Length: 78
Image (cartoon, rainbow, N blue to C red; front, side, top):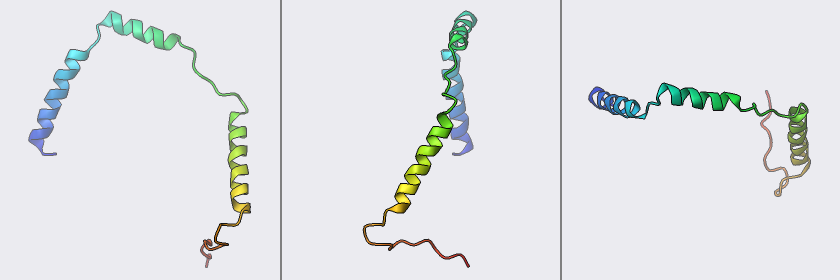
């Protein structure tokens, strides 16, 4: 984007942002509502369960032969 267009975009965004600003009281009220919400948490065993499911899916996928036999092979490491 050339400098003239960038400057025009900057002015448009600045004008838009000025019209969208909240008053201090409304901003404080919104922040209070957001902060007052409890943070969502995951069960302590979530990561272990998830990792186990991914590992099991990988083992199942590797244990099945591909429909065309083993047409796709990993490259040899030399």
